[in-house]
Length: 96
Image 1 (cartoon, rainbow, N blue to C red):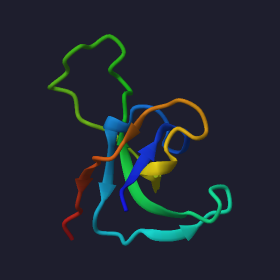
Image 2 (tube, rainbow, N blue to C red):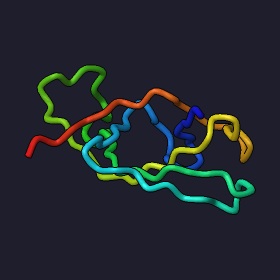
Image 3 (cartoon, helix red, strand yellow):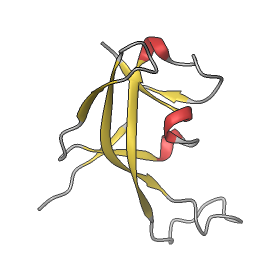
Image 4 (cartoon, rainbow, N blue to C red):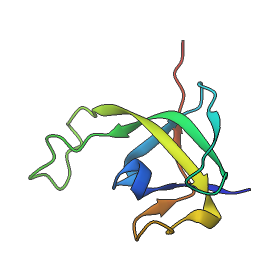
């Protein structure tokens, strides 16, 4: 089964999302999709704060915002209106 992130659940700018691979995701059965299994995971989003007038800003420190991610089965994408979708998600692991 292929899962994806959809803008409807995760906001726009999906290319700025990172999945935390050190935390196990939760599997949830959802009534909105006739009982389809969803995956909830911990992640973060690269903030756009401070980039208003910058095309390139290699000197800027990157800021992240914590975000809960909701993955839906790929076949359900675009059933609730148009929006972004991605199957490929960047990952980040925290070294303890």
